[in-house]
Amino acid sequence: MPKLPRRARTSSALANRRIRGYVGHVGRLPFTFLILLAGCVSQHGGIAAPTTAPTKIDRFAGEYRFLSNFYPATVVYEGLTYPDSEHAYQSAKTLNMDERRRIAALPTPAEAKRAGEALKYRADWPQVKYQVMLDCVRDKFTRNPELRAKLLATGNSYLEEGNTWGDRVWGVYAGQGTNWLGKILMQVRTELRN
Image (cartoon, rainbow, N blue to C red; front, side):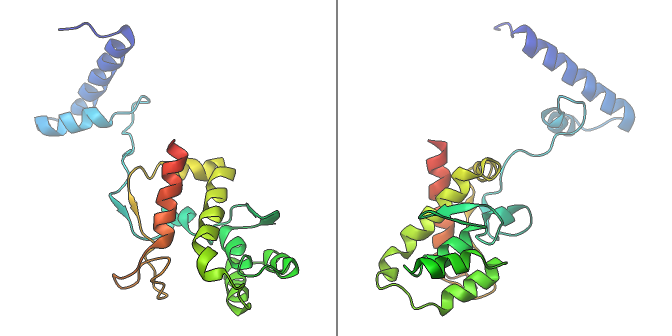
């Protein structure tokens, strides 16, 4: 049997002492539980948090709210700075820079969305809207290191923008939808890994 490096031997011995300490506190535990516990003891002596991401993240809320376009995170798109990717995306529906600046200044992403929906869309919008969303999301996660780390921490989870407002293009509603936002997030995550 190969000899472990000193650090590994020390860590292993420390973990074994911690396990024995837990057993002393809780009495006789089944062997299977002890094996599971051994894998969860942190370097500080407590129980470590799980480190694996779920198989599927199906709502961009709670701890995964950062995946939402409404999450506050600076985005720069075509020379203008926006408070979040929703503002940037909605303003791109027009080529009028005054309108874009007006939308960028709106106080909430919900107001930006309403303003964007009220615009007369640029002629090429159906052809460019997916690329615009990719550019906005890519900028959000490359410009903001803490969000980049959170996106990468989703591992290989399937990202799905489950919603209750009926969006079947960018997300999934009532089990149906193309989930373009989720697909774009997974593409950006793959790019950031490489």
